[in-house]
Image 1 (cartoon, rainbow, N blue to C red):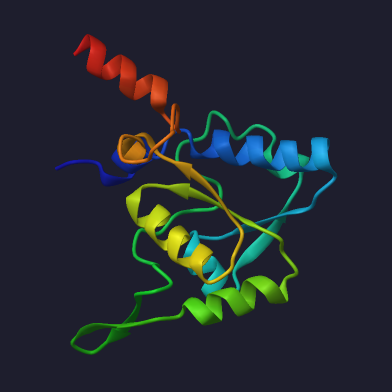
Image 2 (cartoon, rainbow, N blue to C red; image 1 turned 180 degrees about the vertical axis):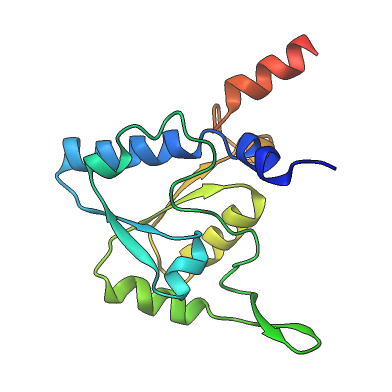
Amino acid sequence: MKNWRADRRRRLSGLNAVLRAVVKTAINDFGMSVTGFKDGYEGVILNSYRNLDRDSVSGILSLGGTILGTSNQADPFRFPIPQDNGHTYLDRSREFIANFERLGLDALVAIGGDGTMAAAAGLSKLGLNIVGVPRRSIMIYLVQTRHSVRFRRCHSYRRYR
């Protein structure tokens, strides 16, 4: 049986590095405060967040996965609501924007693959300022993207395989 957790940690390598870079750059270079949302878009919808500072991102480079968690099913435009017979899906994008604005935030840094970037594009159309950090798996689809999270690892893997 495949170890799902270990595999997921490997697939998510690099996210802590991006998170650390964003936090340290925002604080050190621009004097900004940074808010991190637990499990990605889900954290914005459910108001699950924490303030991030230098100490909170110190020493996270060697950790697998991400200190904030992830969710690949929390698309604000198609958010799953559990039902007795499965799930129903609701558009919670307006609620997402309202929660985001209530916190007084200026922009969202979205780190992820095609689902994350598709939702980010939709949120951008609703007026949210977005900074997208694509993962290597979708880099080939984005015009003018030269590098992304895990670029070197994927590039080396392909070359030496």
